[in-house]
Image (cartoon, rainbow over all chains, first blue to last red; front, side):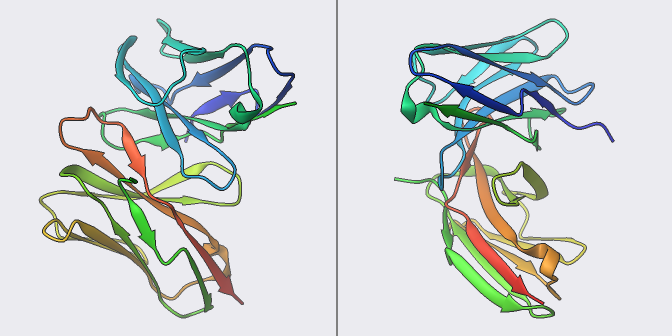
Length: 111
Length: 112
């Protein structure tokens, strides 16, 4: 069965650079969520979209922005990267705004 | 403080034994979900239990929910070495959209 696709899987950036993470939800899933998981930490909710509109906002820094496109894929844009942004970034999608299916994550390392 | 907290933080058992992990939370919830994560990898959805349910089964998994105590447990029966992973509970709170708040996770090691 198709799963959530995230790209890239690994990303290395320098401080103050920008990064764009992409998420392709499972077909016919209209809701996308972004989570950040720091080393040894729990996943923390960042932001979500339903039908291309932002639906919830969590602990997402102002330096980050995200959107969901007409094909339901989503992008997380991260600017002025800091060392503390190094983490696993997960995207999840849902067909019913209840069960969330997670992608494999993008591992971001900021040097 | 954290919405979901898990107990124990780490658990080591022998193959064939049962593993029980507990999760507590603080606010009213719509549902509680359990996820599994292999080291540094994606989160795999295991089971969802709604606030009006008390127990749910899926294969070797049994989940209970006690909303009066704001707690849940995940039981894995007849554990296998392949069950070695971290297990997280995540809650969807009432009136907070449907974002998930994750607990601290239990690291389970099943020794062959």
